[in-house]
Length: 235
Image (cartoon, rainbow, N blue to C red; front, top):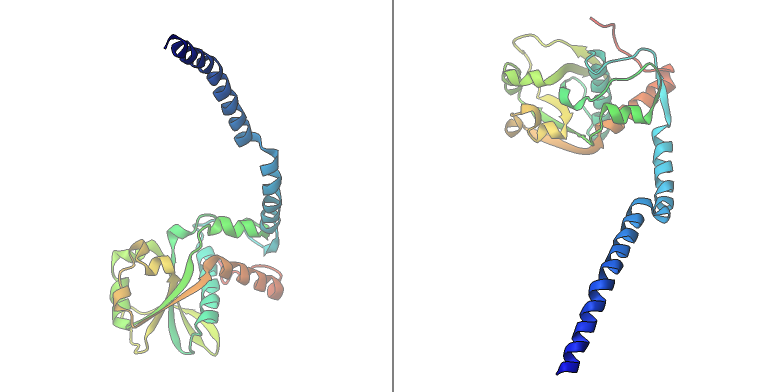
């Protein structure tokens, strides 16, 4: 019995002296591996370099710097959304079209001169997709009389002979055709107080992101005009 007690005491003494050292060494090694593992860094580097190269890709020339509060920036975005929406769900001629650009989604402006991909990621960092809805004219007219519309930039167009012509709707709408509203899927899900979805005649969701529409529009304008096309002078 005495021998057994001595044996247990020896084991306890050895463990109490050696175990803290082993645990401490293990902890130090673990911290070093987490903070400066060169192998992990070498695995990440190709992905990081590839992403950085993509973000530095030249897109177009911008002739005038635009702040996110400028009226022409959301108007240009509205034209890009129109083009993108038309590709996914063709818009018939003689249509009344309203593009809603929710103000909170615009997070940056566009600097003058060369624009790269990362400028458009800063402009719209979220993967908002385009959605369309058809509504009765009376429903839309009543909605625009509420304070909810202050959350949006609103642009009204008619499509005629494949062209989009910006118009100003009169106070009393004398139209019978359904009104097509184009905005982000976030807005159609109830974002920014958009509250007439339940009254839609039809809704056309899309997987086409607004950011991709902006990039496509910028690249197209670079090919056609050698720069971004601002449609009118600032008021």
